[in-house]
Length: 412
Image 1 (cartoon, helix red, strand yellow):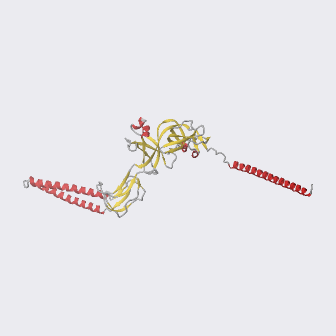
Image 2: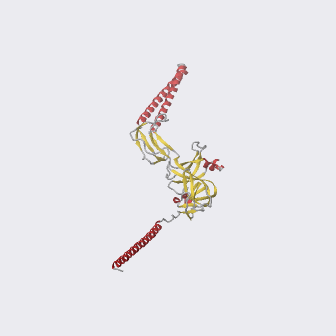
Image 3: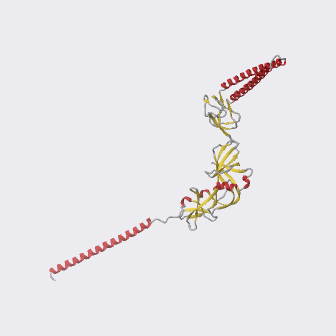
């Protein structure tokens, strides 16, 4: 082989070597890319697994079967206190008000002086009436003497029967004048006495509506406008008025003894801020007809109020026993949800689904338990805690709880 051929062969070998090196380079690059891609995919998969949310846990609620107890049948009402005696104090005579003898809101006793009206005009009138009586008495004495003289003269034939009759009429006229003057005195004394206005009974007085110096109008028979001075209400005892619905009245009246003779039924009472029914009263009045517009009948109890702590206008809860003890179901009052005019209790089905049930409720008992008249069975699982998380139809995780009953200190 000559020199030219050797050079050509050497060039071809170098060219083939370069191609092999380039091929190896591309293979190495491809391997690196594959490794990087595989690592990136694995990393992305792990990240996506870490970012995937875990399944949500079911909301937990506490359930219990309704509590079964034997309780007496009761009716509960909302009542309002009112005074047995209440009046608007007005004057029977007019004049200038000269004195106010009480403090607004005081407890006043029967006969206590409350207002005074300027008595001078009525003192003048009384003095005038007494003077008229003196004049009438003097004329009566004169008429009696003249009648006596006329009778003596007529008996001796020195006078006439006509004169006697005239003197008799004069005497009777004088007597009538005396009687009229006495009546005028009594009338003036009546007006003078009523210049002092006193409390007609013991009670709490309101604010004075006129001030000293005002000219007030009075009337004996209220035939003309009069000035209102103040108001007065009695304290002990006090009425508690409430209304029964037609269904409650039918339940109440099923005992024939209640509506025959007297209504000597005891009612238990609790004020708005009291949890126990510590006060008692006597049901002494039920109206004779239902109100057609409201469908209710008015009832009233009389409540002792020796300390004056009960005030007219205050609301109170009334509880009335209307039957013998009967079995009943009780659930916490917090488990009873109002739904417009109805009530619902949330229960849990065997598959964990929340099922609302419409119930008819009774009164409130010890421990804040509500009597359920209808709508539940003894085996229902009632939700007693976690109600905000229990939407109707939703799945929940129930936990068994216990309903506790407090026999003493029943609430209403």
